Image (cartoon, rainbow, N blue to C red; front, top):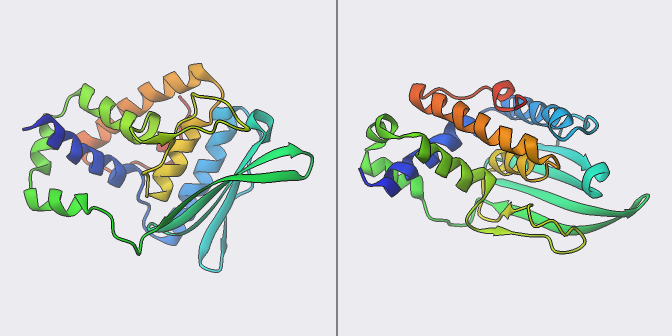
Length: 216
């Protein structure tokens, strides 16, 4: 099988197995686990739990003691969400510097539709090797091909915000890695994710949120 096609199947499978909680309750549970995991991963304070308001799940991750940044999110569905980045210049003085906004009513290339028609997913899941999983994890989470850097007021070139990520849970998990201030933990996390998704792909089993959010 062509290597690019094999990795395309793995790409979609990783999203399905790790970042597609189904019901609103599952999504709230996923986001609760997400917030709790950040406390130890970033070595910061616990965030407030997410809330369900007017049919949307809202939450906020406070990074002020790391980057003078707070990240708030609103998830209406798997196809409509936004994530807002606010910089804290001084006590109670914030400035909005970035909004990642996804609106699923607009067309984008239906990769999954074409892969389903091709019908070679089972073959791909039998033939992948460790390098394939690493390439997919890098492209999805750790170093997206298309990404942005915040030059001001935060000048940290190691933070790469993937601009093409249209799954809310994938995008937020990507930020969990990108905004972590501890390089040793980030390297350990990369190895953990490679092993975790390799096992999930072999068994084709969804990853429970508490396992996905475990510490490296």
